[in-house]
Length: 107
Length: 86
Image (cartoon, rainbow over all chains, first blue to last red; front, side, top):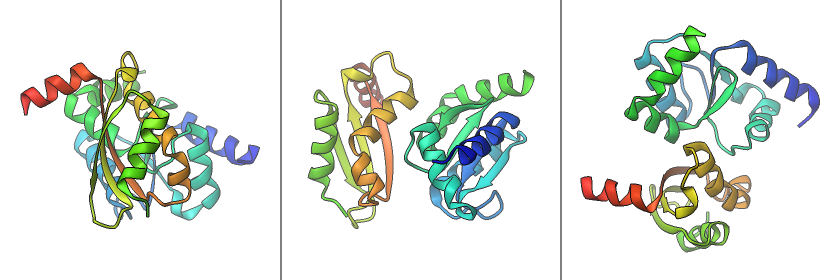
């Protein structure tokens, strides 16, 4: 991953409280796993940013190296990698995601 | 495409004490639901647990032999509780 892709990703992650790197966008998710995450974020009813990795192959591959996580979607809260679809579903079902999101938005 | 037994052996070589259960979600040998139970997960967060499994199957993921992976990770105690509850 080139340093400017890394810098680009870093700035997106650091300048948004909640950001989802996904396939497609919140209105038209292009993959079932990305859709899971969009549905969860919509149910939480909190503001969040999305980045469509299908529009930029450098980001699509760079984000996997950035978090050393091989799949899309990827969710970042307060600049921290939280997880992909499976982990977001588990965190949502356990109520832990709501806590993390409230803390992030309050900070 | 990759055979479920190959996926299981990849995970076991990465996490030797793991018990692995694999389900082919679509019949196409590239969309898997995998349950991994291992004492190695103790004290680790979900992200680290999943990263251990992804690390073990990294080559199959990057070659897209595995297109999608749905993961559930448990320590032996968590698995005992989960299966007792179900």
